[in-house]
Image (cartoon, rainbow, N blue to C red; front, side, top):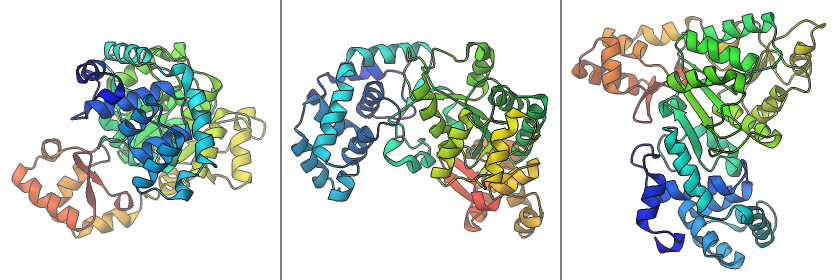
Length: 408
């Protein structure tokens, strides 16, 4: 692939062992390069990669294709003028973006990042991979250019709720967090948070204790588990859940990256709930992203004398968040329920279908895993899955099956 300035052999060496599934080496290399060159949420990079494809967009940059020619290629790719000028005048915007990327525009840091991530036994997921979380598309041009992962990538396919809150959490916050996570675990829902001190750590620990999937989204490279005091917790999340970052190894977290990290926490969850937070807490920033993405938002109320609940109380008062006082109310917030709805849906199912349905959560198990969990033969399971699919109760996802969100 001469237009990438590297040989096919070099590309394979750079991305060796980092792909998930049958990822195309060129796609993987191009996504890795964009990720190293750009800061999280770089909308212009998103426009180029979504408009031309990751590989062709990178080729344009390495060949220093003129902005006029890049515009022409976008038009040839079927993009209209309004789309191309989403950030204003396209040519001027591209020149400004190239000025941002120029200091990182080299192959060496990409190679170094690949080598470092390989030593961590990490993987890299690109938007072209079938396992890429569909909900990240809601971020539009600001969705990640790639995701650096440590742990089980399959957890990205599970339906989850984002739980965030104060780093200075209280015992009240811990009790509330444990109850909320318990409700999510009972519905086979995963827990998403940021790995920080306080409510984040409490949510992750509760999920691990209840054997429900948990995902920690970090603001720096995954070779720097931050905060350091949570290193053992984050290592356990890697072992039993998933660590996610937009940043390559070696990159330190910064205020900007924390704020951008929050948009991923909000986007990955079907809802966001704040347990404790003062009004200046980063958790409020996550709520802002969730509202922009039209995700349900909930907040746990607290004492009027507690600074750590001031943000939650204000969110509820200003009607920017729903009042959450129990695990049941959290489930109701995301459109699920503990009432008769699920029983009614199951009433017309046969024994095989009920057993198969019970074995399917939101973690995308495949047929063999469902068979083992339900005790059904593969032949019985095939019939059961077919009927459940016809009833609209389940759907295929990421190589497995999951319950449809509206049928839980």
